[in-house]
Image (cartoon, rainbow, N blue to C red):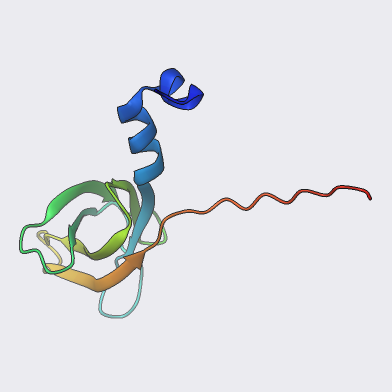
Length: 117
């Protein structure tokens, strides 16, 4: 027997809505002197920690502050590795940065009930 929410969303929709977690990835690209580089493409990737294959999370273009970002929907809470890469261009060499073993926790909801006695 299905609950009212399962009937409304469908079992797969219910599972997906509870399991996925959106995470914003943001990278800042600067030159060796610390000045931001605008208009450069940054590639973002992620993987479950311990895995060897990266999943493409998309690309972003740096703004005037040298920042680029993407939002990725992770299949489930867990421990992940994240990577940002600048492929280089005619003026600048490639660079990358990686954050390993980042724990992404499941969201929670707390409901307070107040009952006058």
